[in-house]
Amino acid sequence: MKQFTYYLLLAALVLLTGCGDSSTSSGKSEVSAATVRLRGIVANREGLLSEGQVVIRDSNGRTIATVQLQGQKGYTATIPADTSYPIMLSVSDDGKELRAVVLNPETEKQDITIMSTLVVESAENLGGFTRENMARAATNAINQSRTKSGKGTVAGFKGDPTKQFGGWH
Image (cartoon, rainbow, N blue to C red):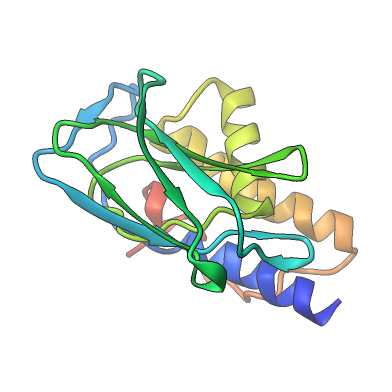
């Protein structure tokens, strides 16, 4: 259980990475001007995944990169210039898909976890990957995690826990 709590905390903290306000509230895609290096870990409820392939798709659903996990170090991907954001990252984990979304090219770190998957699913239900929907989805995922565990979040957030999606910096 301690290991799960650690990964839950780690996933929640990932929501605080990648400061950038370039995603529009209308949901219009942004195109990167330069190549971006993106990295992160991949974790399920049991811990870090060390095998698998990360598939990265642009806002049009085209596969722009695939990378193998590098053991427990996670993944490092090169996102080409002229990529249309937001981009979707996915990894198959025993028939289940773990997913994450990156809204803009300023983000350099994005973990793919059960928490990021909850955020993606919630944002889809809210109508798509706008900054506002992602902020609401991140808050919903944290609250859902609290409800399932019967405890408050271990992160001890002060303020908006959704830095990547337009929160405090």
